[in-house]
Length: 231
Ligand code: CA
Image 1 (spheres, rainbow, N blue to C red):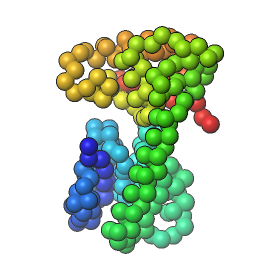
Image 2 (tube, rainbow, N blue to C red):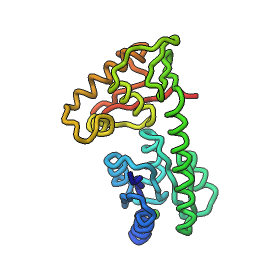
Image 3 (tube, protein in one colour):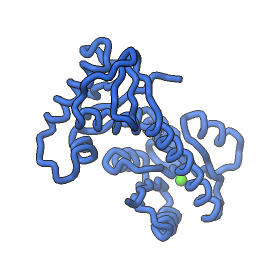
Image 4 (cartoon, rainbow, N blue to C red):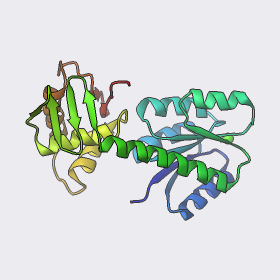
C-alpha cells in the first residue's frame, strides 16, 4: 500500500514540484495551498506524514501544526523560510517532529521524510509486538488477549481488532465510517452503529467507569479516539 503524504505549501511552483518528486519516489501525495485546506485534507485523507510550510496565508503553519497535533501523532515536517533559530524552536515547540530550511535540496527533504517514517514505523511495530497497559487492563496485542490481574477476559475477535487498531493509532480521531473501513474491511456492508456496539463492549472491559471513559473517548460529531496513558 502506498503511503500518503500531505504537502502544504502556498507557493504553487514549489508545491507542485514537491508533489511530483514525491510521487516519483512512490508516495501518494495530496496537496493543500493554505491552512484551512490543509486541515480539510488531513481529516479526509489521514496521511502518514505531513510536510507543512510555516508561512501560509490565513491560518499559519504553526496553528495548523498545533491543531493536527491535537488530533494525531503522525510525523510533521515543517518547511521554514528563514534560518533563524526562532522559527526552528517554534516549529518544534508546537509539535513538529523536524524541519528543513528553505532553500533545501530534494535529497535532503527525502532523507528527513524517510527518517521520520522509519521512526514512526519502528514505534508502531514495537507497540504491535508488545503489551500495552490501559489502567488495570493489559492488552497483549500480538497474543489477542486482554488481561486483568493476569486473567484473560473474554473479548470478541472484532472488538479486539478494533482495540488493537486504535492502540496502533493513539491520539488519532477516526469516524465510524473510517473504523468500519479499516477494521471490518472495505466491502463490509454493516451500519456505523456496529462500531458503537463494539466500542461499548470494549469500554465495559477496559474502563473503570464506562460512562466516563479515559481511554476510548467519543469525539462528538466526529467519532472515536484512543488516549494512551502517558509514560
Ligand atoms: Ca509559504
